Length: 208
Image (cartoon, rainbow, N blue to C red; front, top):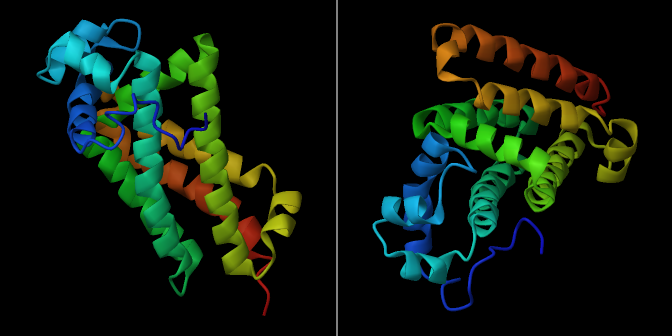
């Protein structure tokens, strides 16, 4: 199963309640950690009985898959908007800044820090996280191709590390701990500058 497929029981897969549940359990994951949050804790956060909660999510792994799929679905629409803009790279820069603001508003940094840590210990979580980054890298390569006039194959062959580096920097900015709040703006600006420098290598190949 790929990261873009929700790991839900069939009867719950298309239930509109799923989005609401995920919004409620994000906080519990962030507060207690992946290992610390029990299914009982998560069900309580969602205001559900444990039995009913299991109808939607049979495991914590299924919840992580659903969170990844949800974020990917949001980003897909955003990336498509960037691709259709007259200046895709500038649109991408604005999108990345907006996504950082969203992560901060949702307090998602701790959640994704927990998922990243769990990915090191649990192969299934690691694979889901890897699938997510692979999909995001593909989106970035499409934007790089649209901006430069090169094909996606050419971009992927010539700059295999650039998208990965941009993703790594973005994750670092998104997962800044609360203790970094006094310098968050400066840190984010430095990270954005590093991403801009990385992208300038690609922009230099823009076809006339």
